[in-house]
Amino acid sequence: MPVKVLPAVEVLGHARSFRYLIEDYEPEVLVCGRPETMAGEDGPQAQRVMEAARKLGQATGLPVEFVDERLSSREAKRILREQGLSERDMRGKVDSVAASLFLQTWLDRRNQTDA
Image (cartoon, rainbow, N blue to C red; front, side):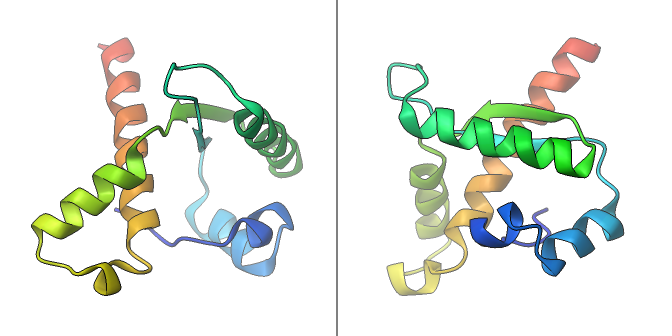
């Protein structure tokens, strides 16, 4: 389950809200969405995200792993629509559901390699 969605500026700026989450939950790894192109390649956006995530990993002392986040927002909206939410009701929920989706992909992939 998602804990909280923070604006990128808070995460990248190591704001108190981000530091508290790290302290409270004591993660072992930072899992970051990697915005690949539809062809599965890294575009300019993916390069920026990966660079920022690596700096964040260095600052927190945590390893960073990436997972493809293509279409996660679209899938999140589909799920929320199926639950009967309107576009207005979806505000503030799409990012959380999308993050849950690509985190689940990462967990599934990790569990397959551990098996």
